[in-house]
Length: 438
Image (cartoon, rainbow, N blue to C red; front, side, top):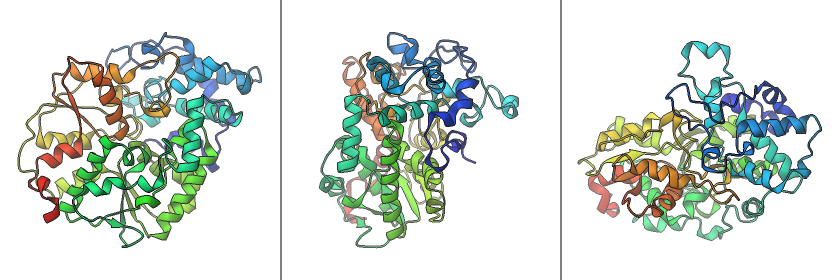
């Protein structure tokens, strides 16, 4: 059972009704630990990054949302009558999982390992409650305008920005070598950049770095190109279950059509959805395909461990690392990116790291939605990165890359740059400037 399995077990057959989370809602003791109590693990008080960087209203906390959820379940609150301000605060949440990670309602079988509990040990599915409330709001047609537009773009164009599908694989022009398209040449391993990275100039450098390393390791891989579909991760997190299922069905047909047996994901959000949501929503349709899903950090580390690639020099700059919420906290993958970095450079950790890591602000719709009470998490996290004295903040997520670059741009005295772990690794290899000769 995966680390995230408890979170998704309540989504059997695609159900996202708040009534499915009734036990969780009533299990909440309203203790306020998710609001402002000191964490048991590291004695820091920063549990909810949103609450601590806004006006501090209760609606920004898990406890406040659970109180409203209880009102809905008891018929005292109607979703369509919720205030614009509350709906805005609900979508201000980045679904980073920190409140759930530090909730003290623990599975009794896990008490012996306290305070080193896993994400799956926490009995209240706070993320599920939030997402179910969002589903109710979308169903009533009252989400914030920015969220409505993102969902419309995903439906019509297959990406949140509403950009042309014909431009989805433009990144491949930067590779310096021809890359297989699944429709032209069969292969079992799919490199899946996803919607955010495919259209981001910043993240396109990451895609190229991964592709060059894979080719240097003689890994047979392909892309879907303009045929690639959105994973549906954002649609699901934003509360549009029907759209998620539609996108998931399109993906199943493509993967089945081209005989894909392994997916290497660039985004932790896509990785989480393929790994944890597809089996629950799609059942045997998905599991019978027997597809192995990996985040690219795992892939690159395996290549290093198996001597398929060989760093030839040290990376010359001090690095700190940003844990993506959906790679680290939600799925427990903390070590692979760090092992890659430590093989080639010196790593300085931020104060809030691993299970305590501070969100970049881009998850749960934060990449597009600008709340009324602006938390500016990207700036706060950028300040924390700058405090390490490192020259580079390394990322393993295209959303983190975009958000942290924005955050650093607001701190002119900090000269730190954002680089992906794949870019750093590639700079230590001899074939960095000669992809055409590989």
